Image (cartoon, rainbow, N blue to C red; front, side):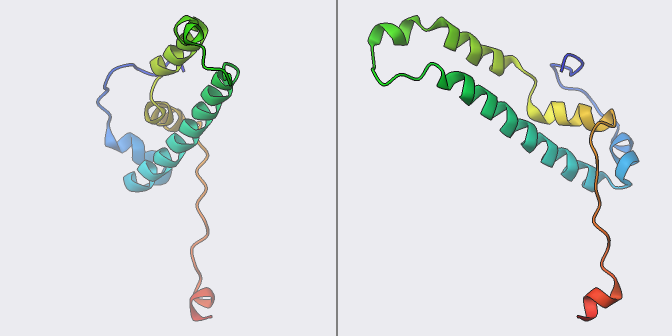
Length: 109
């Protein structure tokens, strides 16, 4: 995650088409990977915050829970899932599986 730029980066569209041969397919793959990363990060955050869940609403606990605030801030500072997915894709870390194209026999059934 350290190699992901924090600011906006201009990309060469030809780089996206190298793996799949199609820019739009590459964007679709990146989108699906970004969704996977987003779900994973959300599950991690929710599991860590669940440790702080309490049935009693004590006003002092709400203001004094610095650990919970630090965990939330950490996840807010992480690169966005889309940025992570783009970097993974361009570095060749994303496996692209293409289903076999339909044959004439499949269409005639």
